[in-house]
Image 1 (tube, helix red, strand yellow):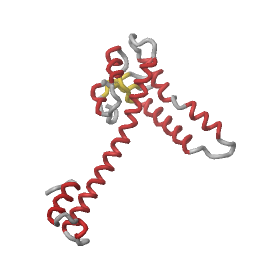
Image 2 (tube, helix red, strand yellow):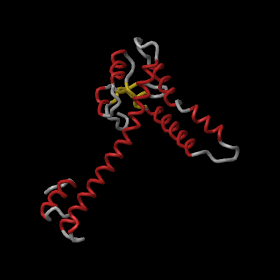
Image 3 (cartoon, helix red, strand yellow):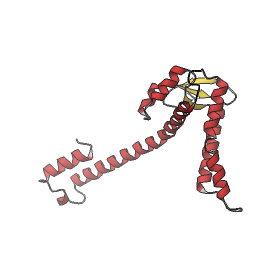
Image 4 (tube, helix red, strand yellow):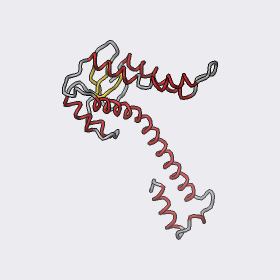
Amino acid sequence: MARSLAKVQKRVSKKRGGKLNTLHENSRDSKRLRRAGAREDKIARLLQAAKSANQLYVDRVEWFQSAIEDSEDKDLEISDEALQEIVSEYIHRTDEDLTEEKAQRRPGRPPSSLENQLTAQQESEEKEFKSGIWIPDIRNKALRERLERWNGDWSGLNTLKFIRVVKNGPVKDSSFPPKGLS
């Protein structure tokens, strides 16, 4: 039995002589078409939700990729303390936008939605940093070169090595994709 919408439409149109509008409202073929259409919509929604959930991690890795490209000493090993400073820079990357939003707000007015969003994002990243934030491993030159060659896709992340950096704590190896405190 055909499951995709295109295949169901093709099968029904062959059966009906190319006329899909001659279907009865509650016929088996019209129900088949509705189910196939609903299935396509559901799959598209699930793919979009997964893509938006993954985008957070892609943006994070892109930030670290650009931070490495901007750094002067690419040949040096990065210590755990320096790694924690880089993560702190990442968390506070929106401080300028946040202070600008606060300055634009008139006294006595509630914070704007953008200000609330930036504050919530910063708080959640700070909370994640305390328990272990998931980032690409940039401690040595070979790993940084691999990150520089990354093309920006979610599917390309599996070639990179990842770690969890804990604020005032150890750096632990992690896996891809991120799940829990792996």
